[in-house]
Image 1 (spheres, each protein chain N blue to C red):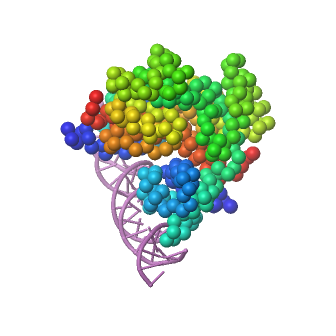
Image 2 (cartoon, rainbow over the protein chains, first blue to last red):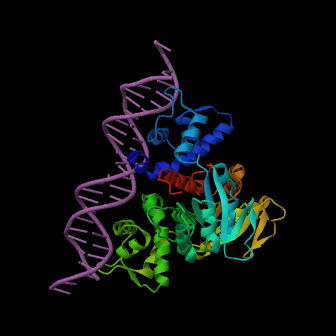
Image 3 (cartoon, protein in one colour):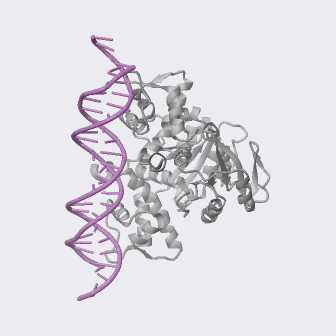
Length: 216
Length: 216
DNA sequence: TAGATTGTTAATCGATTAACAATC
DNA sequence: TAGATTGTTAATCGATTAACAATC
């Protein structure tokens, strides 16, 4: 138990590629594909076939030699590896433009994430609904979170409140945090944090463009 | 010229850390800090001091031995490395929830990115403004882009239109694309693409949580 | 069977960490 | 000068790529 569940020696790079495989496989399935080779899959998403085989091999043997991978089977397998078969309850804290956008993001539903609450402090926002999910006052975070057993909290508040909200989420028993505030937040080790810093992407783009011969 | 401008042998990991250094340095500056050591900076953002020194060393010598780094000087230097001293013109294509949120994202201004246009096909959205910037019909993309010399296009349209919009952006002479659609887009080599796939972050969070001993 | 494609081991490449001389 | 901290070289670690035996 200790080894199989707790010790994860899989590289972060591999884990970040799995969702891409998952997505592309689903697309292929929609196109009616039943079997796919690592070659074909790799071509579709710009990854080498060896990389794909290696990544998958960390978790088991999902393919058939001389044949390839059964699409629906591999989707199910990767889904299980990623824990997408679990019905995760998520909540958005901070219903500004970004929080609003995230709450409306359709792809999350299709991955099995279930938005069960939103929180804000603005009286005008309290009580508003998105797809049947309500905005509560931040004061009720703990109460609502416990009632609805929320697993994942999404921080979409201004930077200066990020740590405060993180503390409240932790106190309310959240297991993971997806942090959009451009600031490092401190949480107990047991709580997983994924930082999604949007300025990194744009800045790195700027880096590469600044080094090209400009065309305009 | 060939070596200094074209060949970039800096690792992607390093480039992705630079914006974090930049941000943290600015924060430190606001707090009145004038000199910072790699030790202190590292502590603030959870990176080892050696890593920081190594990263910076790829671009030059910015510190003083026995002293540390002058905060304002290092901010200027990293800003230049990232090309943030250039006045980038950006445009958002697709003014849905996400596009709207991105157009309103305040951090971009402070990094020197200038939103100069938005595009959509919805007649209700055409003509709307955010901070003085207008939403144009997608049909006018090329015309408006050329008139305003837009360097970077942000794709925030539904997945199925992503490639189409990418083609239009390329035709309009864009140099870089920041793609939020969860799909690989094909562009000529000269155009830089950064993919920002939001489902990756959430899925990887799910992966780690699924492997923990659950607390609820 | 012959051709195809996986799973896995070995070789290479790249990035991080450790150590320390240089020097403020 | 002594203490501190950088910049850089060497050692380690990890991830990707190449190669190929296993087998469908």
